[in-house]
Structures are given as structure tokens and as C-alpha cells.
Length: 389
Image (cartoon, rainbow, N blue to C red; front, side, top):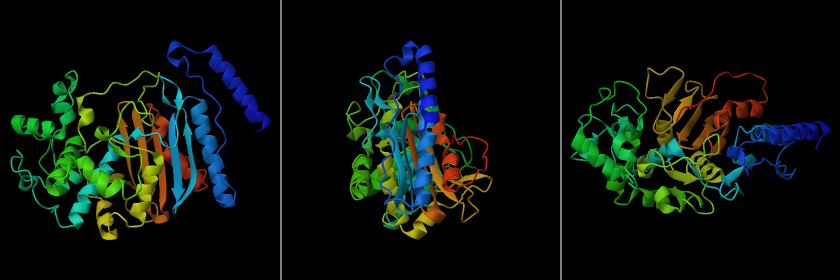
């Protein structure tokens, strides 16, 4: 370790000790072990990338800007992975490769994949109205593909059912959510297919469609058809884990106060899948290798369906940047739910995967452009922050 780095760490420690408060009690930051990668595993250029990534995330951690897990891979090779900070404030247990994070809206990627698997098996027609699969669905002329692309115009259940979400000890299921929509029939925000409107209701309904068409509970379908075949050993729905288990992270705000759950945490499809950075890497690689979906189906998922969106767009479960550029095109999803912030980004032209997961409300989770700058070896300054869910 250089003398300059040692001196910087010394000054930071002194500053932290003189400015501690009750919310930080017991959470003194510790210098983390350096990343261990054999020189034979990476090329000289990749090792330089790994070192720069490590320096950046270590700085985020030591300046209290990040608590979480990071993994960066290219063409099937992991260039960098590390964990920074704690999993549970109660015992200050450190994060590990097995630490499971609530994925928040990254769960939509998995839901869309499940629907497209059924589409490939010719069990679901994306052009059919949702009412043909759910006969008592109270809205007409909303197609399955419009749920996938957020063009249904439906209201967000998180807003229209707000009073129900805070009933003590209540766990709202997808069926509960659906029955309330059937009975209340809240008005549409927009005419179907009129414009893009990001809405969690769409993906909660898609989870119900997966159940109805497959004949399996949504969580079971994911487990048997995706997680187990891909070796995603630390990925499951909220119903299949012990929330106080040794590998499950706890969510916190920026002052390390626990963030409470509410009834909507138990609605699946739009969120509430727990996973690790490594398991998402396995999922990404399976997509690159066409093990889950055919290339033509993936191309459909990565199609920009909202012409009114100029810079970013949305396909089937994937957001997109540079969607008109075949070299720079990036498909991704971010998440923001209670105390979790998550980012899952993939650049298709060079099979790049970037996963950043945090169990604290750290904005640096979304600084994926800084990762790209390092990987592409440029000094270009990219303005703005990506905070899409």
C-alpha cells in the first residue's frame, strides 16, 4: 500500500472518529482486504481495470457512499467482484458472495423472461388481450405485450391501493391485488398503447399470467425453470426465504435506520426476488449463451416499443440506452425499493455484465457510467445520474 493511500486513510479515520453520531454507533468503517485475483486469470489490461474498479468502489465505501456488492464481467470472464460493508446492523455481519439482496425492479427482468419462455412454448400469445387469460379482468383491449412494455395505461396498485398496504401484519398477495382491481376498477391513466407509463401493476399481473398458464405458483415456476437449471443457488422469492436468515441482507436508510416493509412486499412479479451479484452474472451469461431464450426472442425483448421516448426506451422487461447504436446499445434495469438500490446492466456487443447491489440508499449504485469509463479506458465525463427503476 502506498504511503499516500496510508496517509489518506489515516486522515479519514481521524475525521470519522471526531464526527460520529448515535446512528453510526458500532458501524466504524474498516479497510477491506485487497481484491485477490491471480495474475494468470486476467490479462494485464484487465488487471488494470480491476485495480481501478477496486479503487473507485473502495473510495465510495470509505467515504460512506456505498454499502453493497459489485460484479463486472466481460465475455464470460469476471474482471472484478467484491463486497463492501455490512449485511446486518444487528451483529455487524459483513457482506459476502452469498449475501442476498432484494432486487426491487430488476425482478421485472426475470418476470418478463418467464413470460417469454411461455411464449416460445406457444402457451401464451403476446398479441392477445389480457381478458382472454383472466376472464374477469375489468379492462378491455389491453394486450399482454402492453403489460410487458408498460403501455397498458393501467394505474399503479402501489398508489390506488395505498390504504390497504399499511394494514398491520397484512401481506398482500397477487390475488389480493387482482381482486381489489376487479372490485374497485380504478380508472386508466391512459388509453391502452397510447404511451409509455412505467407501472408495477403490469408486472404483478404478468406473474399471475405465468401462474395461470403454467399451472404452477409463480415462485415455483422461477425456481424450477430458471434458478435451479442455471445454478442460481442464492436466488428466491420473498416467500421462499427466511428474511432474518444468515445470508439475507437487511435494508437501511442513509443513517443506518432499518426500513420497514409493508403489505406490498409480498406482491411478486414487479419486485421481491432476492439474489446475489454472482447469480445475476449466471443469469446474464445464460442469456448471452441463449440457454434461456432464443436469439430472436431476446431481440424482441430488446426492441424499443415506445417511439415517443428519444434517449432511453423500454422493451419487454428491459430498459435501453443507445438503443439505435448496435455497438453501444445497453439493456438494463435498475431498482429502488425501500432500503435497496440495485443495478443490472448489460452491453450486448461485447457481452458485458455490470451488477451493483446495495442494501442502503446509496446513489452510487447507479453510477454504472463510471464503470463503463474504466472498462473503455476513456476519460470522458458523463453527466447526470441514472436513477430509473
